[in-house]
Length: 220
Ligand SMILES: Nc1ncnc2c1ncn2[C@@H]1O[C@H](COP(=O)(O)OP(=O)(O)OP(=O)(O)O)[C@@H](O)[C@H]1O
Ligand SMILES: [Mg+2]
Image (cartoon, rainbow, N blue to C red; front, side, top):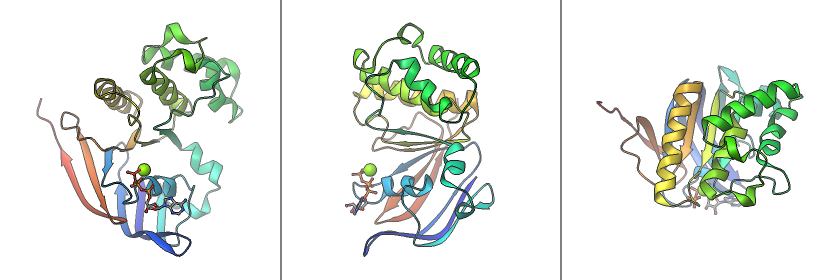
């Protein structure tokens, strides 16, 4: 669904990504790994157009990305971060609904969808609580639901468990993998951990290039 050919990105004069060739198939579940500073966050920002490519070609569903307005592109994607980025003054349900309201969707429809997804991630009893009243793992679940509310084709995640303990992190990865299958959403997740128990393709980045790709296929 995403194809990049010979893409380069620089911050000012400093090159950060170069010679990037990358293809993410529809329905993929993929990790992006590599040392700190190698360009992983910049790569995700490139995909959601928070930074622009200096050169090269980028396609989403065969359409050159530059032909899409930023809002059209973002509509296809959900994004989650290490710091959950929830609004503290709004409840769990309100935080999730914001994503649907931004697209002008009917309130009844998005409320039903929000409640379904919040129940799915085990937060039915937290709808009217505020982020500060939730654990980190629960807050990230809210952020995941918010990212999925508009049924994106692709979820981008930048170290989604960076602020969580190991066990909670494993739960979140398991949940993401299940949601990937149930909701048929491709996911590209930046992570520093290895997740050998999850079927995934791992892309490795080094010095601003994607240098390697490996698939783990589990035999259950
Ligand atoms: N806004 C910016 N302006 C200038 N340089 C930047 C900017 N953001 C990142 N960089 C530089 O680009 C390089 C890649 O940064 P990036 O954040 O993409 O790395 P990363 O792989 O996500 O690292 P980490 O694993 O630590 O999150 C780094 O050398 C960083 O200092
Ligand atoms: Mg980063």
